[in-house]
Length: 220
Image: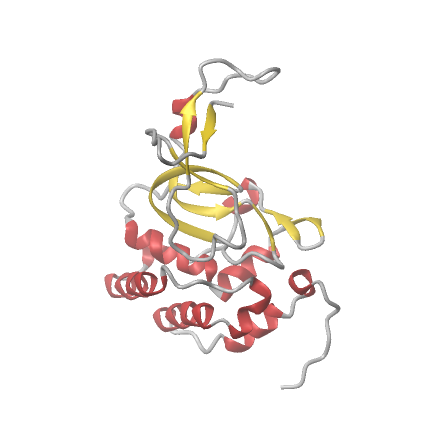
């Protein structure tokens, strides 16, 4: 432990944080810090005191989910206006030379049907729909290489993110009828020259790991 959590946001510190993953409040791509951290002066009982500045060097604007309930929660990645540390999320620092346009494109991708499909396929199951994502797995995760996007493609995805940033998304099992998720898929599809992702999105929505229901045969 290197910090203590201060959930009273009226007393900000130099260490903003994004704490927890509440399915009822974390509903949009864009989020803001909801807590602050203060460096610990002394270690907790039976816990080593970690270097607060070393921990802070790992802060990031893009957060990728660390653990979540696939049947209730909505977001697998969020973007904040400033770097934060987090609990229940892994902060991601983009490489030098990448900017907010790349962060927005990556956040869109991770919440698209294609991004969800790849992420869920690499989950670590714990109990029912409750899953975790480990760092070594995320390091190997296939994602859209935002470094290779052309300026026009980045501009399209940036505009799509800005348009959808505050649109509440539905829980994952409801993605088949989620207009916000459909708009994310449409933006990704247009930029990458892909086909309509509606059928894939509807198929993923019926996955038993998310619905907690037996897989049934559906008529078209």
